[in-house]
Length: 328
View 1: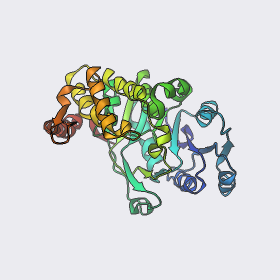
View 2: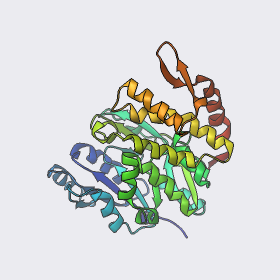
View 3: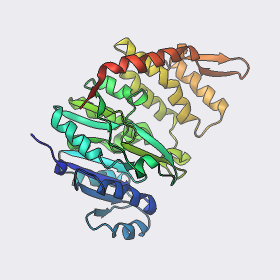
View 4: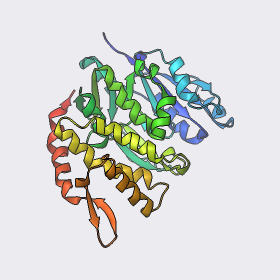
Protein backbone atom coordinates (compact mmCIF):
# COMPACT_ATOMS: atom_id res chain seq x y z
CA UNK A 1 0.00 0.00 0.00
CA UNK A 2 1.26 3.46 -0.92
CA UNK A 3 0.49 6.35 1.43
CA UNK A 4 -0.22 9.94 0.34
CA UNK A 5 -1.14 13.20 2.04
CA UNK A 6 -4.78 12.06 1.90
CA UNK A 7 -3.93 9.41 4.50
CA UNK A 8 -3.06 11.96 7.21
CA UNK A 9 -5.61 14.24 8.88
CA UNK A 10 -4.46 17.05 11.15
CA UNK A 11 -6.49 18.27 14.12
CA UNK A 12 -5.60 21.46 15.97
CA UNK A 13 -7.18 21.69 19.42
CA UNK A 14 -7.68 25.28 20.53
CA UNK A 15 -9.23 27.28 23.34
CA UNK A 16 -9.07 31.08 23.62
CA UNK A 17 -5.82 31.53 21.68
CA UNK A 18 -6.90 33.17 18.41
CA UNK A 19 -3.52 34.76 17.69
CA UNK A 20 -1.42 31.67 18.34
CA UNK A 21 -3.69 29.23 16.53
CA UNK A 22 -3.28 31.24 13.32
CA UNK A 23 0.47 30.52 13.41
CA UNK A 24 -0.25 26.80 13.88
CA UNK A 25 -2.74 26.74 11.01
CA UNK A 26 -0.29 28.43 8.64
CA UNK A 27 2.42 25.90 9.51
CA UNK A 28 0.09 23.06 8.44
CA UNK A 29 -1.12 24.79 5.27
CA UNK A 30 2.48 25.40 4.17
CA UNK A 31 3.40 21.70 3.95
CA UNK A 32 5.43 20.80 0.88
CA UNK A 33 3.62 17.44 0.62
CA UNK A 34 0.55 19.30 -0.58
CA UNK A 35 -2.75 19.92 1.18
CA UNK A 36 -3.78 17.72 4.08
CA UNK A 37 -7.23 17.67 5.61
CA UNK A 38 -7.09 20.13 8.51
CA UNK A 39 -9.64 20.55 11.28
CA UNK A 40 -9.58 23.27 13.90
CA UNK A 41 -11.58 22.07 16.90
CA UNK A 42 -12.43 25.07 19.03
CA UNK A 43 -13.94 25.05 22.52
CA UNK A 44 -13.26 28.72 23.15
CA UNK A 45 -15.58 30.74 25.35
CA UNK A 46 -15.84 33.58 22.81
CA UNK A 47 -16.01 34.09 19.02
CA UNK A 48 -12.50 35.47 18.41
CA UNK A 49 -11.14 32.18 17.07
CA UNK A 50 -14.25 31.67 14.94
CA UNK A 51 -13.64 34.99 13.23
CA UNK A 52 -9.88 34.42 12.86
CA UNK A 53 -10.27 31.06 11.09
CA UNK A 54 -12.61 32.58 8.48
CA UNK A 55 -9.48 33.80 6.69
CA UNK A 56 -8.66 30.17 5.81
CA UNK A 57 -11.50 28.70 3.72
CA UNK A 58 -9.78 25.32 3.26
CA UNK A 59 -9.75 24.71 7.03
CA UNK A 60 -12.64 22.72 8.43
CA UNK A 61 -13.65 24.61 11.55
CA UNK A 62 -15.75 22.94 14.25
CA UNK A 63 -17.00 24.72 17.34
CA UNK A 64 -17.33 22.42 20.34
CA UNK A 65 -19.08 22.97 23.66
CA UNK A 66 -16.66 24.65 26.12
CA UNK A 67 -18.67 23.32 29.06
CA UNK A 68 -18.12 19.67 28.12
CA UNK A 69 -14.95 17.89 29.28
CA UNK A 70 -12.62 16.60 26.54
CA UNK A 71 -14.98 18.04 23.90
CA UNK A 72 -12.24 18.52 21.28
CA UNK A 73 -10.78 15.05 21.77
CA UNK A 74 -14.18 13.37 21.54
CA UNK A 75 -15.01 15.34 18.41
CA UNK A 76 -11.76 14.11 16.87
CA UNK A 77 -12.80 10.54 17.64
CA UNK A 78 -16.03 11.02 15.68
CA UNK A 79 -14.44 12.87 12.73
CA UNK A 80 -11.15 11.04 12.13
CA UNK A 81 -11.47 8.82 9.06
CA UNK A 82 -7.98 8.61 7.51
CA UNK A 83 -5.34 5.98 8.22
CA UNK A 84 -3.29 8.33 10.39
CA UNK A 85 -4.09 11.28 12.64
CA UNK A 86 -1.94 14.17 13.82
CA UNK A 87 -2.88 16.37 16.77
CA UNK A 88 -1.12 19.73 16.89
CA UNK A 89 -1.33 22.06 19.88
CA UNK A 90 -2.67 25.51 19.07
CA UNK A 91 0.58 27.15 20.19
CA UNK A 92 3.03 24.89 18.31
CA UNK A 93 4.45 24.98 14.77
CA UNK A 94 5.68 22.29 12.37
CA UNK A 95 8.40 22.40 9.72
CA UNK A 96 7.03 22.66 6.13
CA UNK A 97 8.68 19.35 5.14
CA UNK A 98 7.35 17.32 8.07
CA UNK A 99 4.40 15.61 6.36
CA UNK A 100 6.57 14.88 3.31
CA UNK A 101 9.20 13.24 5.56
CA UNK A 102 6.52 11.26 7.43
CA UNK A 103 5.08 9.95 4.15
CA UNK A 104 8.53 8.85 3.04
CA UNK A 105 8.84 6.86 6.26
CA UNK A 106 5.37 5.35 5.88
CA UNK A 107 6.21 4.17 2.37
CA UNK A 108 9.61 2.69 3.29
CA UNK A 109 9.03 1.16 6.74
CA UNK A 110 6.42 -1.52 7.35
CA UNK A 111 3.67 -1.24 9.93
CA UNK A 112 4.30 2.15 11.51
CA UNK A 113 2.07 2.92 14.49
CA UNK A 114 3.71 6.15 15.62
CA UNK A 115 5.80 8.94 14.04
CA UNK A 116 7.21 11.69 16.21
CA UNK A 117 10.30 13.81 16.72
CA UNK A 118 12.40 15.86 19.05
CA UNK A 119 11.53 19.55 19.33
CA UNK A 120 12.89 23.07 19.53
CA UNK A 121 11.49 25.14 22.38
CA UNK A 122 10.80 28.83 21.90
CA UNK A 123 9.22 31.40 24.17
CA UNK A 124 6.12 33.51 23.66
CA UNK A 125 6.17 35.14 20.21
CA UNK A 126 9.92 34.86 19.66
CA UNK A 127 9.56 32.50 16.68
CA UNK A 128 12.95 30.90 15.83
CA UNK A 129 14.86 31.72 12.67
CA UNK A 130 15.00 27.97 11.99
CA UNK A 131 11.24 28.11 11.42
CA UNK A 132 11.21 31.38 9.49
CA UNK A 133 14.02 30.24 7.19
CA UNK A 134 13.76 26.45 7.25
CA UNK A 135 16.51 24.14 6.09
CA UNK A 136 15.98 20.63 4.75
CA UNK A 137 15.14 18.15 7.47
CA UNK A 138 17.57 15.42 8.47
CA UNK A 139 16.33 11.89 7.77
CA UNK A 140 17.86 10.23 10.82
CA UNK A 141 15.46 8.43 13.15
CA UNK A 142 15.14 5.91 15.96
CA UNK A 143 13.16 2.78 15.13
CA UNK A 144 11.56 1.19 18.19
CA UNK A 145 9.26 -1.82 18.20
CA UNK A 146 9.48 -2.61 21.91
CA UNK A 147 6.52 -1.21 23.85
CA UNK A 148 8.51 -0.77 27.08
CA UNK A 149 11.44 0.91 25.38
CA UNK A 150 9.16 3.26 23.45
CA UNK A 151 7.49 4.40 26.68
CA UNK A 152 10.80 5.03 28.44
CA UNK A 153 12.11 6.91 25.39
CA UNK A 154 9.87 9.84 26.41
CA UNK A 155 12.40 10.52 29.19
CA UNK A 156 15.60 9.71 27.37
CA UNK A 157 17.42 10.71 24.20
CA UNK A 158 14.67 10.06 21.59
CA UNK A 159 12.40 12.30 23.72
CA UNK A 160 9.33 12.44 21.49
CA UNK A 161 6.09 14.42 21.92
CA UNK A 162 2.33 14.10 21.52
CA UNK A 163 1.88 17.42 19.73
CA UNK A 164 2.65 16.84 16.01
CA UNK A 165 2.96 13.06 16.37
CA UNK A 166 1.34 11.04 13.59
CA UNK A 167 -0.47 8.00 14.98
CA UNK A 168 -2.69 5.27 13.61
CA UNK A 169 -6.24 6.59 13.81
CA UNK A 170 -7.49 3.39 15.44
CA UNK A 171 -5.43 4.30 18.52
CA UNK A 172 -7.47 7.49 18.91
CA UNK A 173 -10.75 5.73 18.22
CA UNK A 174 -10.15 3.18 20.97
CA UNK A 175 -8.85 5.54 23.68
CA UNK A 176 -10.87 6.35 26.83
CA UNK A 177 -9.59 9.84 27.66
CA UNK A 178 -11.99 10.40 30.57
CA UNK A 179 -10.71 7.32 32.37
CA UNK A 180 -7.03 8.17 31.97
CA UNK A 181 -7.52 11.86 32.80
CA UNK A 182 -8.73 10.84 36.25
CA UNK A 183 -5.75 8.56 36.75
CA UNK A 184 -2.97 10.74 35.28
CA UNK A 185 -4.36 14.28 35.17
CA UNK A 186 -2.89 16.50 32.49
CA UNK A 187 -0.15 13.92 31.83
CA UNK A 188 -2.72 11.54 30.33
CA UNK A 189 -1.11 12.29 26.95
CA UNK A 190 1.91 10.25 28.12
CA UNK A 191 -0.40 7.39 29.07
CA UNK A 192 -2.07 7.63 25.66
CA UNK A 193 1.26 7.51 23.81
CA UNK A 194 2.33 4.53 25.89
CA UNK A 195 -0.82 2.66 24.91
CA UNK A 196 -0.40 3.25 21.17
CA UNK A 197 2.35 0.65 20.90
CA UNK A 198 0.35 -2.04 22.69
CA UNK A 199 -1.26 -2.82 19.34
CA UNK A 200 2.17 -3.61 17.90
CA UNK A 201 3.96 -2.02 14.97
CA UNK A 202 6.91 0.34 14.88
CA UNK A 203 7.62 3.76 16.34
CA UNK A 204 9.66 6.17 14.21
CA UNK A 205 11.19 9.07 16.15
CA UNK A 206 13.09 11.59 14.02
CA UNK A 207 16.14 13.21 15.59
CA UNK A 208 15.75 16.61 13.91
CA UNK A 209 14.55 19.06 16.55
CA UNK A 210 13.32 21.47 13.88
CA UNK A 211 10.33 19.29 12.99
CA UNK A 212 8.33 20.61 15.93
CA UNK A 213 8.65 24.10 17.37
CA UNK A 214 7.21 23.92 20.87
CA UNK A 215 6.02 27.25 22.28
CA UNK A 216 6.46 27.87 26.02
CA UNK A 217 4.40 30.72 27.45
CA UNK A 218 2.57 31.64 30.63
CA UNK A 219 -0.83 30.66 29.19
CA UNK A 220 0.28 27.11 28.40
CA UNK A 221 -1.27 24.21 30.28
CA UNK A 222 2.17 23.16 31.51
CA UNK A 223 2.48 26.43 33.42
CA UNK A 224 -1.06 26.45 34.79
CA UNK A 225 -1.00 25.62 38.52
CA UNK A 226 -4.77 25.15 38.46
CA UNK A 227 -4.17 21.85 36.66
CA UNK A 228 -1.26 20.73 38.83
CA UNK A 229 -1.12 16.98 39.38
CA UNK A 230 -2.27 15.45 42.64
CA UNK A 231 0.07 13.18 44.59
CA UNK A 232 -1.86 10.12 43.42
CA UNK A 233 -1.69 11.19 39.77
CA UNK A 234 2.10 11.61 40.01
CA UNK A 235 2.36 8.19 41.63
CA UNK A 236 0.20 6.67 38.91
CA UNK A 237 2.38 8.19 36.20
CA UNK A 238 5.58 6.93 37.81
CA UNK A 239 4.05 3.48 38.34
CA UNK A 240 3.16 3.37 34.64
CA UNK A 241 6.78 3.98 33.67
CA UNK A 242 8.05 1.68 36.43
CA UNK A 243 5.91 -1.14 35.02
CA UNK A 244 7.73 -0.74 31.69
CA UNK A 245 11.19 -0.82 33.25
CA UNK A 246 11.52 -4.01 35.30
CA UNK A 247 13.04 -6.21 32.62
CA UNK A 248 15.68 -6.01 31.30
CA UNK A 249 17.96 -4.16 33.71
CA UNK A 250 18.90 -1.24 31.42
CA UNK A 251 15.25 -0.15 31.26
CA UNK A 252 15.23 0.05 35.05
CA UNK A 253 18.29 2.31 34.92
CA UNK A 254 16.56 4.65 32.47
CA UNK A 255 13.47 4.81 34.67
CA UNK A 256 15.35 5.57 37.88
CA UNK A 257 17.47 8.22 36.16
CA UNK A 258 14.40 10.29 35.48
CA UNK A 259 11.84 9.32 38.14
CA UNK A 260 13.05 11.72 40.84
CA UNK A 261 13.32 14.57 38.35
CA UNK A 262 9.77 14.00 37.13
CA UNK A 263 8.41 13.71 40.68
CA UNK A 264 10.02 16.99 41.70
CA UNK A 265 9.04 18.76 38.49
CA UNK A 266 5.33 18.01 38.79
CA UNK A 267 4.98 18.17 42.57
CA UNK A 268 7.00 21.33 43.20
CA UNK A 269 4.78 23.24 40.76
CA UNK A 270 2.21 23.69 43.52
CA UNK A 271 4.16 23.02 46.74
CA UNK A 272 7.11 24.33 48.73
CA UNK A 273 10.44 22.53 49.21
CA UNK A 274 9.49 20.92 52.54
CA UNK A 275 6.35 19.40 51.02
CA UNK A 276 8.36 18.20 48.01
CA UNK A 277 10.92 16.54 50.28
CA UNK A 278 8.17 14.81 52.26
CA UNK A 279 6.68 13.54 48.99
CA UNK A 280 10.03 12.15 47.80
CA UNK A 281 10.35 10.23 51.08
CA UNK A 282 6.84 8.90 50.56
CA UNK A 283 7.79 7.66 47.09
CA UNK A 284 10.89 6.04 48.56
CA UNK A 285 8.86 4.23 51.21
CA UNK A 286 6.42 2.91 48.61
CA UNK A 287 9.24 1.71 46.34
CA UNK A 288 8.22 3.98 43.44
CA UNK A 289 11.66 5.58 43.33
CA UNK A 290 15.00 4.04 44.24
CA UNK A 291 17.04 5.02 47.28
CA UNK A 292 20.13 4.59 45.08
CA UNK A 293 19.04 7.66 43.14
CA UNK A 294 18.99 9.99 46.17
CA UNK A 295 21.67 11.70 48.18
CA UNK A 296 21.01 13.48 51.47
CA UNK A 297 22.44 16.99 51.53
CA UNK A 298 23.26 17.77 55.16
CA UNK A 299 23.73 21.47 54.46
CA UNK A 300 20.31 21.94 52.90
CA UNK A 301 18.76 19.03 54.81
CA UNK A 302 17.13 17.80 51.63
CA UNK A 303 17.14 14.86 49.23
CA UNK A 304 18.98 15.38 45.94
CA UNK A 305 19.61 13.40 42.79
CA UNK A 306 22.71 11.28 43.22
CA UNK A 307 25.18 12.90 40.82
CA UNK A 308 27.19 9.69 40.52
CA UNK A 309 24.46 8.31 38.27
CA UNK A 310 24.91 10.88 35.54
CA UNK A 311 27.85 9.08 33.86
CA UNK A 312 25.46 6.14 33.49
CA UNK A 313 22.93 8.49 31.92
CA UNK A 314 25.55 9.67 29.43
CA UNK A 315 26.48 6.06 28.66
CA UNK A 316 22.93 5.11 27.79
CA UNK A 317 22.40 8.24 25.74
CA UNK A 318 25.55 7.85 23.65
CA UNK A 319 25.78 4.10 23.28
CA UNK A 320 22.53 2.36 24.07
CA UNK A 321 20.20 4.33 21.76
CA UNK A 322 22.74 4.25 18.92
CA UNK A 323 21.74 0.67 18.14
CA UNK A 324 18.25 1.89 17.18
CA UNK A 325 19.42 4.72 14.94
CA UNK A 326 18.63 4.55 11.19
CA UNK A 327 18.39 6.81 8.16
CA UNK A 328 15.79 6.93 5.38
